[in-house]
Image (cartoon, rainbow, N blue to C red):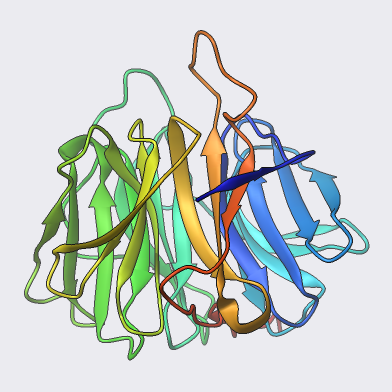
Length: 286
């Protein structure tokens, strides 16, 4: 059963990431142009205002620096000085912005782009920032409308990804990108949003419009469902000591009559799984 955490409301919360070194849970409010961090032991929330929407981000080898995927570019953000160092502009089609992203098991940042306008067109794609060269490449995967669910199996040999508008989560061999296939089709009322992988290789997915978080077995079958008080759950993460607490971000954007639950960070204790440390981007400026 989920409980809500006060003082954590976002318009569109996404990309929760647990930093085991500083014991904080970070997430982004994309349209609010904010990075947020929860200290679960003190119940304190810290916020950083940004110059543009933050689609996704990753931890780095420096605990005080994040790799950020802002709408228009990728770069390093120092949490103490609040200084942003630009690395490269957003790849892909003109008029897209950076959306979901996560480091692979080798320390590269795999991220997506999507149409920044309305209605959303199928012009998005998946890309990778190489940690060794700091260069970006577009992955040979089909174009998508609303890319989500980027995550990797514990051994790094399988990449998961989704197009929320198609209602499916896909996967492929990684890093070859061969054997592209449907991992699972969402059979609830919602669409697949963000995902994470637990230590057993099961995938946890938050359903936009589905009021639930679902655990899928490696063969794609539904293993466990946790109902959510939020209509739009957006991305789960197993975090905290021992990676045993399930958190999920949510959204209130676009709702005519949002409740006090919509847009808050929620958590569930005593879940059926243990999480994994988040991959860190290993690239460094010369």
